[in-house]
Image (cartoon, rainbow, N blue to C red):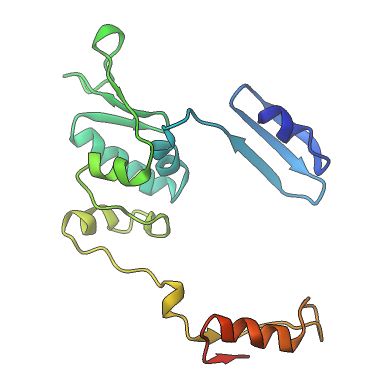
Length: 171
């Protein structure tokens, strides 16, 4: 996968490349980073790479309070000295999903949008996580662009799309 990614025609230059990750600058400008992970172990990687650094630290502290060190690769059991155990005593726990990681931490699932270290761990412990806005809550679209300006669809196509979504308005 890394080899295929770094040889795409949209890649202008490869900034870094290893067996499990690569960074490339696209011809259109942005840098894109790719990281692969072992099958069935995505949970801690997703926790580690979503949300803010502060949220990652909060989750890691919660894990540490439970006797585990959290990294993208999983949880390592901590010894009495607070350092991850090594050798035969080492114990690595990995999880296929984010929900299983949070269950291991005795927390409800914390949506990626809430991972900002603004009290989400404490709210999770208290059973008071806020609900996110879902597509079903949306009643319309307040700002759209048709092919009359820089959009790609006609007004009729946009109106039909809004009707299919059950919207009450489109502007």
